[in-house]
Length: 167
Image (tube, rainbow, N blue to C red; front, side, top):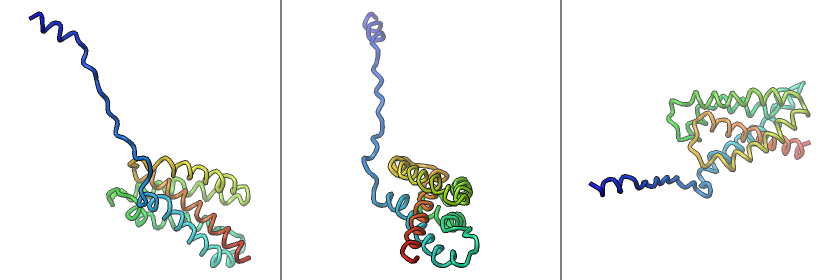
């Protein structure tokens, strides 16, 4: 009986183990969340700058507008191709695209002033997200935010490159 009292008074240590985070993203993750959205934005930005902008009298919608609108229109396909979520969550992905695309389109309507917020600031945020979010399993809404920033950066780069090479 005396042994029961002494063994009950000794505290049992609690061991908490954390799952180790991977040290780097796989090529598949990098392509899906960084490469493809930027390439999509770049291609749409180049095509928009070359084919659509010469036809517009007021330079609105610009190539970034076009890329963001195409991304929104193709969001069900983008969700299916770029995320591992179930297909019935495409509306959540589309909501994430629209939650960032519409404010970015408003910013890009401001002309050169939009370059600071829509270009520089969005690029810095996209780089930060690309270096930190790949470690986590995110919901489609957050993947959409990440991909939309990539499309924005790609469209800006593609349109500037096309304008400088073809002007």
